[in-house]
Length: 206
Image (cartoon, rainbow, N blue to C red; front, side, top):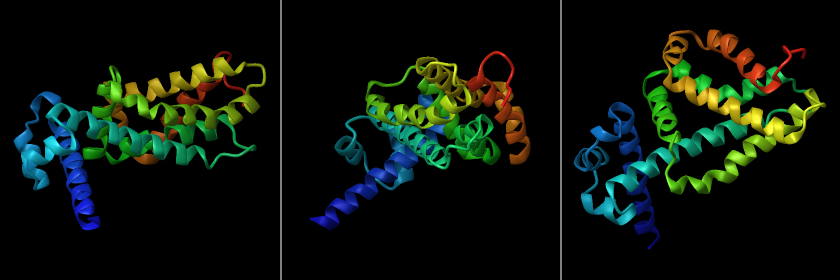
């Protein structure tokens, strides 16, 4: 029974990986069920069994990529402490996106796919609400310490704006410009901008 369960999980994971690779290359309109199953070494019945439909498989693949992004962001934010600055927070918050921009290729294509679908997310993404909330909660101690005069709701709003900025970068032409830079150049260009989104007006003082 355990071997069958493991085999089923491998098939499911293989389908998710194959779907995400093809989605990143062609977008949702250019992917067929047959291509996904061929790449995954699975059959059409496996898609029906694990996901129900091609659309559900594609939605799950993109959701899975988003979850990995959020997990990486949470891990980066977890390294912050009471001495961290807004610059430190911005660097941690933007780290998964900066890595995707620096890596380019498949990594960046996946990020663009997630960002595109994230504009109008599927209903199933609601299960990730807790992870979105955790990124905001993890950012709050540094924000509250650095910006003592700003209330919590406004700080959360600024965090959401910073997330939206990173999402936009994945899709906008400027994202392609950043992707042509080295990892160090990307960080030098992007971190002050994200820190500025956190700080708000007037200009950053710390």
